[in-house]
Structures are given as structure tokens and as C-alpha cells.
Length: 314
Image (cartoon, helix red, strand yellow):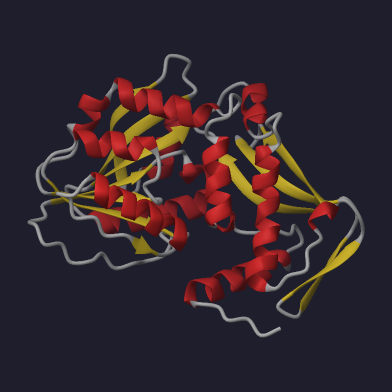
């Protein structure tokens, strides 16, 4: 079957083929967020077990005046994500004199639908969506208003999906984008009791399982793969030594799957690693970011489950 793929899809296909060719098969977690995956993740964020979203939102609400104080006049507000969350609206509702708001997301449909709503809700704000893989270099558009500062927003502890070397490279890219006097407003999930963490990724309604399996459905839809979804199942556990959740898809049977004319053999019980989600200590995160940023402000919930940080570019 001849596939018609755009540039982003072709780059992702290379990552997919390379990942499935490893001894520990893996797929990039950015594949989760097609339109269906983005909607499923929005549902996950409302689940009782999934503490990160509501905890981060509570931190933002309780500290909003102090948080928006880091945004100086004539700031470009860059968000890695589609801007669909309540947290984005909370910030936009409380920010004055922004030069522009720029959401960057790989899920083009979800991004542009969200942007249409935001343009209606904030008619006086220049909003410029960019459909791109924000982990790679990109060019910011020209802004009509004066620009003095650039602040990037990366909520949801999505930074935890990166391996440490990838996270350092990504933080370098952000620092270069923001420049001197720029900063990063970021959410990080904190290391805590294993049972609390594992419950968040193994919800009783199996929405996270559906979210994980949708990754294979997307490969079938967009890349002509022939995964039989019923022959895979969801697995998530907390690796305490590495301080990270590992999310996998388990092959329930011995099978062979074809993607773009490449065949991949699976033993029974062999897994595909689909996501890491690192949990941090403050000292550990400071060390991760120290080459490019220093921590200027910390906001935290009373249970010490989650934190929002403001990092200043060094």
C-alpha cells in the first residue's frame, strides 16, 4: 500500500521503525496525541486516580497572582501543547500586555480546533498556532507587537516523558529559544508513594489502557500497519530505582506485525515500551536543568505530590 505521508509523519515513521528494531521494542510517546488520543488524555485528566492534573490546577489557582508576576510586559507566551487545558485559560485570563500567545503541538487537528476557540475567547490577543514537533528546532513567527521577553510553558510534567539526556537537550533548546531574560514555567510530578503513582496509570475504568492501545490503532490508521489490537494489553508499573513509571504494551501471543513493508516479530509476553514518566526530587530536577536554567520560584501542594516551577535562563 502506497502511503501519503507529510514531513512530520515521515520523520515519525523513521522513529517508529528504529524503535521497533531495538532489543527492547519501543515507540515514541508523542504518537499518543492524535485527535483521539488527545481526547482520551483529557478524560484521563478527570479520573479520580489521576492526581497530576487536578493537583497542578489547584497549585495554579492558589498561586495565580504570584505565578503571573513572572510575566513582564511585552512577553511572548509559548506553550508546548495545544492550549486546551483549563490551566492555559487561567493564565490567559490573568495576563495583561502579552505580545502574543503561541501554542506548539504535533497534533494538528487538535491544535487548530483549540486555537479557533481561543481566538473567539481572547479576541484582543494575537494567537499563532504552530504545528510542529517541539522537541526539534522550530522558527517562531513574526509578532506584530513589541517583544521584550519570551516565556515557555510546559505543564503536566510532560518533561518526565524524556530520558535524562533527552530532557537536557530539550531544556537547552528551550533556553536558546527564550534567550536572556527568558524563562520556563513548568510542572513536575514529584517522587512519592509507589501505590499512589501506579494507581494513576492503571485506572479502574481502563481509560489509560485505551489511551495506550490507541497508539497501535494510530499506526494502523496512518501508517498502514496491521496490529491486531486485541492481541496486545496495557501494562504500567513504577520503577523505584529509576524513579519513573514505565508504560508498555504486552504481546499476548507470538505474532508478526507489518509496518511499511517491514515485518516485526513478537514473542509471547514481549513488550513495546511506550512511555517513561519520571518523578522528581527538587535537587534532582535542579541538577537536570542546571546547565541552562536556575530555579527562581517553586509552588507546591500540601501533599507534596506535584510542583510548578519557574526557571530563569542562565
